[in-house]
Length: 117
Image (cartoon, rainbow, N blue to C red; front, side, top):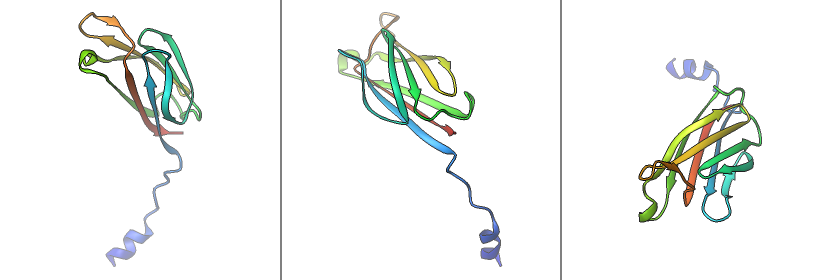
């Protein structure tokens, strides 16, 4: 009977959930190196990027985001600083070099968002 009870449970609808990501090349000409569910990348200044989603999330609070950076040994001090603004259709980030305490473009930055449409 236990298997029958499990079969009677509704299946989880994952069609409303998404994983979006962007790999941002920050040095030289800023560009998307790779992405999923991203329609645009805007370079607002040193270490300051806006990523616009191709398909917006249900609301600004319906998704979670993480970001990291990578680079050469000389650039290893560059780290994610803060999200300046989060909306259903975009997110704006800021990156900081902890040695100089100033905004800086990383070699690469990675943004991952998971949530509901």
